[in-house]
Length: 114
Ligand code: AMP
Ligand code: ZN
Image (cartoon, rainbow, N blue to C red; front, side, top):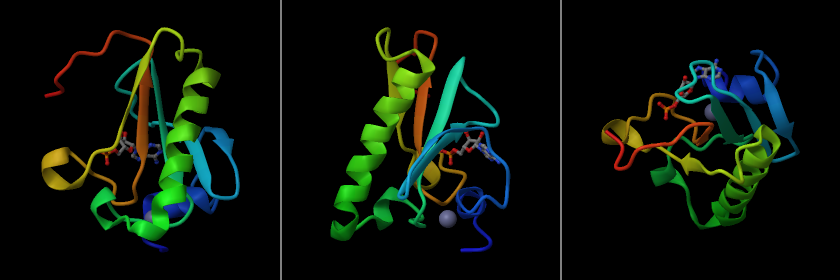
């Protein structure tokens, strides 16, 4: 999708600080970090929201989670702890409609979120 910000990042049309990438997923630093470590993990393929994910996306969603864990290790926050979360639609606080796993770490995170 040419009008999707994260599709354009995945295609290399918009620069990002890439942490890891393979043929199906990509991780990069969030432009506006909400924690000392804040990365986003996206599938290269466009899926607008978690609510749009289907049975065919099962493996891809698993890859996203495992890539999130790898990102946390690479950022050095795996042992102390981190949060991996996906916002969905308006009440979930989603602002970019291409699914992305937030990986947040480097400080103690409160729960429940606001
Ligand atoms: P969400 O609100 O869950 O949809 O998260 C979208 C995230 O994308 C926010 O944390 C933004 O800071 C981040 N973001 C927006 N534009 C960019 C960009 N060009 N590069 C990296 N992160 C971005
Ligand atoms: Zn997209």
